[in-house]
Image (cartoon, rainbow, N blue to C red; front, top):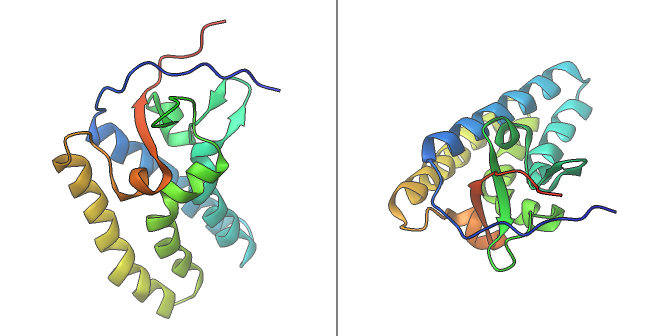
Length: 153
């Protein structure tokens, strides 16, 4: 059982750090998809892309690998506690569902390009223009990204 400390009040995080964290995670997803045999690799990558922000392991909670490296954390907007798997799946659904099509050779890649890339662009646009920095995924998951300060004992 893990004890999770609530996170202090929200301060809008750097869009560059958020995009950088997502790029790190996408590189991880692509690597897993390329290393593991088809269709296992793409499916594991897809699962990671949906659930990574809900990881709870030792001192890691509410952080994908990319967010951990860039000292960011996903928290529930109301409770300020680190995101769980449900919140992670909801917040990552807009991009995750589009990237799921990458599993299908050729036609899936076309769908990804036509739907996934515009969705990702819209998410970045929302992070830049919405005062709170929330994107569609944050609204769907009732989450926000904050700077990770670590947990005190």
